[in-house]
Image (cartoon, rainbow over all chains, first blue to last red):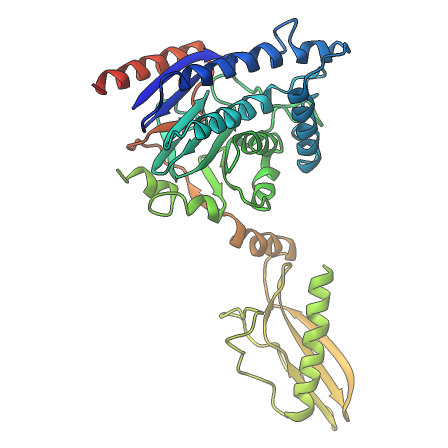
Length: 248
Length: 145
């Protein structure tokens, strides 16, 4: 039973291990996050991302793989997930989830049976029996629902406290009518990209999430209405968001 | 739209086949039909038949765009008329959205609450939340002796 929280990649990252874990494994996990920060932060002048954004040659096989995947996601989301949305290259929206997925692979390889990584409110769990609360978009200390996840990712994109940090790359405007989108999936990087894209789509987002294979989603609309896919509700204890709050 | 048209054509053909062997319109809807019958829909009105003319209505169909019923008319064994009756009062577009949205998304009214949970999604970005998170982590660590 080990809990470690560090501020890395610009966010608090929390690793919660509920199984035996060998000494040094969590050191390796956080060393990996710091390595990702050094190579991928657009705020670090000598990072591979910053050099690539300036048009300099920056050899990094991970960066090539990340950018290839980002391009595939841009196409899969009709351009709503776009690492060039702000004008400059900024793959941070993908890198955070990708770093967590890779950290999860480290934990798996070290034989850790049950763990949860929470990177600023985007979550990857393994080993069964995790109850993930979905934060209410307008009430910081209240939940909108709970999902039970054994192995997988839960990512949320929303207005929240940082303000409207997601913009529709087609119009440059913050999406209207939608408060937050939560996506369930296998990998955090993809779930996070889908949540960002669906949020940027505004009121067309829910219908788009309903067509995603292997992913469930809930969208909180203005006026306290929620649209959820059946596979998302199937993960809510009691079968509905309201019921999930009265469990446990 | 193409699927709806295909469904119409198939139904029209089915009705024509039925009408050829049955002078009465098929009143019983097939309960196993993939085309879901709408319970409250009334059958399409029948006009007074001319000599040698037979008419029949098909089952009520819910297409992605509306709830409809097709009526076919045969005169001496030849198809002389196909009429499509829309049974829904709402515009076809609204009906289409409802029909499509129903199975893939379910709406709920949002309630705020609390529950026993391990982690929160959509939670933290600012330094304030970071401090909250740190505090929570410290508290949790304290509980684990």
